[in-house]
Length: 324
Ligand code: XMP
Image 1: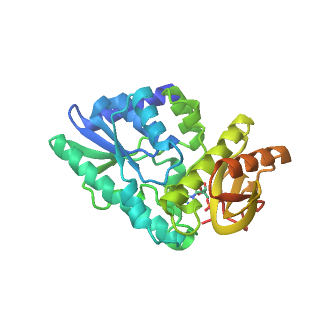
Image 2: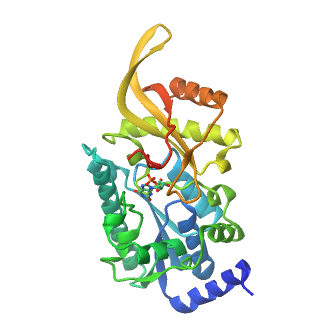
Image 3: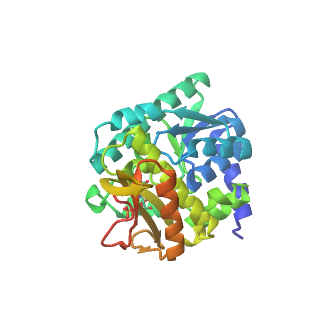
């Protein structure tokens, strides 16, 4: 009979016999549930012969790269290499305001850096890396079969899709028969902390598509701080698991405010929180007024550069979840 415990055992055996006694595997981790569960499964199967690579693209949330590092290494014992490529990504994003260009730059830069790092690791291991791990789920498999051509997508979603094209690696996809809820259950059994197992989805291009207009280091700092406060208050209010996704968006608009007896002229933060089953349609989340008052007060007081906070009350459709 099919149980998750059995699945883990058979899958680990299958991975071991596929890789052999000396083969090695690489895989990108993002800090999300799919790539972490896939990585932990490989770690259980072949230990240090699995190499996880985490690329810090400079547009993750506040403290996120550090958290990903700590959870994967200290908590899960995964062999992890962190590449701080923030300067490279932010350098390439300079002057870019078009959302699709931002996505392409981030996606392509990620692939370049990952390929470079995997070539290094392969050289260090004496050419033993034969496989690339991907955290593909069953719905991704179905989608790639049924949706042909880019005309179907409103936004190009760059995760680790294009990775294999130039690399002479075979693919290993241990989650390809599982649905999201099964991956979460698997993650829990593998000892992955609840906070990560139940994390809201976070887009590959990160807060670059939540900073409207140009992505500069100072804009990143403002967007990060505002987002951190919003999520912290959501957690404190016990609402995190009722909401499907929530974030702050930094608008390229200045607005007049008053702080003490000073006139200010600073930017606007838009807050977005949605409830959805499949992310194809979504409703905005109805916070109570007290909650919104608290968050807006904290953001304006604690985040330099913000003079005004607004709440997005648009459903999908007609609006998308992200602002870009
Ligand atoms: P939209 O904005 O299309 O978002 O309604 C639906 C879901 O997809 C996520 N999203 C992305 N995820 N790369 C990703 O990995 C992207 O470029 C991207 N754009 C949107 C969004 O966060 C939401 O969960």
